[in-house]
Length: 232
Ligand code: CTP
Ligand code: MG
View 1 (spheres, rainbow, N blue to C red):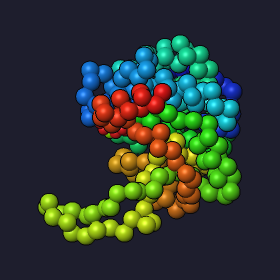
View 2: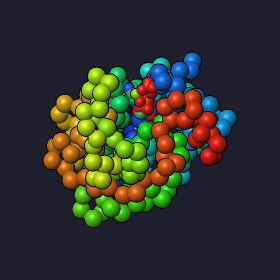
View 3: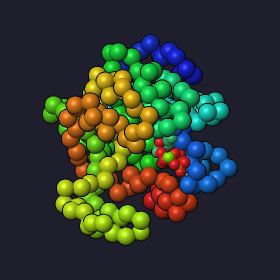
View 4: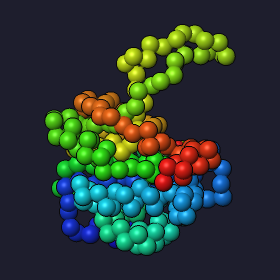
C-alpha cells in the first residue's frame, strides 16, 4: 500500500474510492466521523471491510482526513484489507477528496465506485445491482430511495409551494461509473458537488438508478450512529 502516489502495480478493472475525509461537525465528537466508534471499531472499518470482501471489487483507495492517513493505513492493515492500494489526504470538500482518490486510479481501470464512509452498512447486493445496471450501457448508476414525506419549498419561513414528489428520489452511495465518464466529470469545476453523479450528469453522462437500501443510511448525527449500531 502507498500513502500518496503509486499503487500496487497490479491493475484490476473495478476500483472503489471511499470518501472518509470529512470532519463530522454535526456528529460533534473529538475526532473525524470516520473514526467514531461503531460496534467497537472505527466507523470506516465497516465499509472498508465490506468493500474489501466484495468479490466484484478489485482495488480500494481511501481519502482520509488530514492527519489521519496513518491511522487509516493501520486500520486497513489490521483488517487485512489487502485491496487497499492507496490512502490519500482528503480535501476541503467531498468532491475534492474524491478527486484526490481518483488521481490514484490507473488509466486501465474500467469502473469506479465512489462510497461515503459515513454509510457503513454497504453490502454486496447493492454493488451487484449497480454493476449489472452499469453494464446496460450507462455512464453512471446511483442507488436511490423513494421520498416518503411531502416536500415543500420554503422561503423566509413561509411555504412557497408544495413540490410534486412523484418523480423525486433520494440518492445514496455507493455510486458506480465508467472510469472515463467519472474522469471527464472531474476535469471541470467540481468543488461544490454533493455527489459524483451530479457532476457526471452535468458533463452529459447518462445516469441510471437502482434500488437503494434504507440501511445505507448516512450517519450524520449521534442519533444516526446509534441507529446504525442497532442494525449491526
Ligand atoms: N467527505 C470527505 N471529504 C470532505 C467532506 C466529506 O471525504 N472534505 C466525506 C465524509 O467523510 C463522508 C461523506 O463525504 O463519508 C459525506 O459527507 P458528510 O456526511 O457531510 O460528512 P462530514 O462532512 O464529515 O460531516 P459534517 O458535514 O457534519 O461535517
Ligand atoms: Mg459534510
